[in-house]
Amino acid sequence: MSNLRELFKSYKKVGLPASEKSVIRGRILDLMQNGLEPRRGFSLFVFSWRFSAPVLIALLIIILGGGTAFVAAGSVPGDALYTVKVNINEPVKVAFAVSASAQAELQSKLAQERLKEAEELASENRLDAVVEAAVAAKLQTHLDRASKEISKIENEGKVEEAASLNSNLEAALQAHEDIIVKLEDEQRGEPDSQNDDSPRPSRLREVLNTVQPNVRSRAEARTQSEAKVASGLQDRVKGAAESKRESARNTISSVRSYLNYKRVKNNLRQESKDKAEARLAEAERLFAQGEEKFAVKANGEAFVLFQTSARVAQHARVLIDAGLRYGLDIQTNLRTQRVEGESVEQNINEGKQVDGEDDPGDQSGRDRDSGSDGSEESHDSGGDGGGDDGGTLDINLKIR
Amino acid sequence: MADTGQKDGAFLKAYDDYADAIYRYCLFRVFNKEKARDLTQDTFMRTWEYLRNGKSIENLKPFLYRVATNLIIDQSRKKREESLENLQEQGFEPGFEELSRIEANLDSEQFLEILKELDEPTRLCLTLRYVEDLEPREIAEITGETANTVSVRIHRGIRRLKTLIENE
Image (cartoon, rainbow over all chains, first blue to last red; front, side):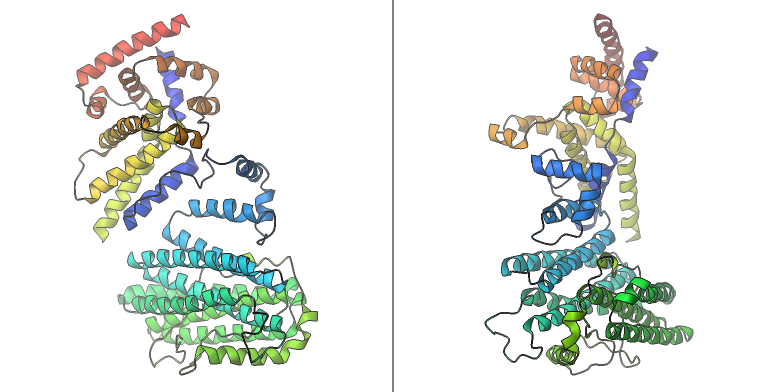
């Protein structure tokens, strides 16, 4: 009998495998928060037996070797391993990002990943219309999902987190917009070409058309989150400002030390370095302003200033990476100054003109530093950005 | 908001605590990992929906088992309607054998085969009693029988098991 008991007991260790348990947990959470009917089945996931043989083999390689998944992470459309990346690596990550904030962060990262792929292909003249359309569609999907998750977080009352996520995403998108504009200029050869609909249509146009409205909507969402943060209870606003101060300080110093890495220093062109320095100085200036506001207990304003300073630093970080990857000096459009009345178009054009003047050397200066992995960019905890906080602040983000 | 949060937290905790047990329960009835997993998921989701509709559950654990039981019955009814095409699409279903090979030693694998020879109500009572350590009273709440019936089932089940093992 006791033997029988033991036999029964041996089944006690049978349980839901941990990974599946957390996937289901995430779905339940999703149901609890959204009231959405869950996806049925597990067809996307590792443990589904409905996978076709090649996928299963690829999976085994990943599980056993790990190397393939790692290699695949750097692939772009057209590469053999790209399928692995978008059909296996990423869905697995998505499946395991359980909380809304993990999902929001992941979707933001995936959006940036799509942007980097498009940029990389375009910089090598390998981007065709079909691929671009696919990338743009994927990009929009990721951004929609990120936006949905951020709203969810905000609706849960976690306004500080929503503000951060919005600001981070905004910084990244803005940086990529700048990069794309610059890449387009390069490709067109003539930065200030009069006719945009020349026979050879500019690459990345569609991606850019996807990015731009999203930069705008992110900035709007971020401003709203910030307003919500600032209108909270005094203690809470103070806490928000404090933690934002901390994270902004970290962000700025991490970007500064990134810029001082030997590898970065040696491979970045002087103009890019100067520009990055200028951005960082700007971030520090904003941070100092934040400190002043914080000292006089203007916590809402301080929060916005700290967030803005972090956003400027993060933006600089993405631009440094692009400088390393494509050898570009990117003119930024990130708005931290009062830019009332200026339209976007004007800004971009202005950027193009300035860029055009520095251009001639760019091709030769292209310096790909494969070691610099852009993928870490901009998910730095903290920082983010500033806002439109009425007349008292001298940063007045006029969202276009 | 705080109240909702509390409820959410309590329910998630229930999931963390009981998901494995519910999974095992389903597994011992359907003998298929995938189905057991889907059933587990559905069990918790249905239960949550029930709670969300303002209904209260006095004792969550037996309630979960009952929901699972109903779902298992539902799906075994549905199964008959599945077309051949559908089955082929799903491909080969590695059954419980797969799991026992990984999770348990040879002894318990044989034991499982023997368990399968018991009728289902008896097998359930035994697994709930000896794998999940539930009291007959609690099992009765799940199966909807009296505690006495459950005790009798357990008693007879053990006797039957012993006979089966001796004949192996």
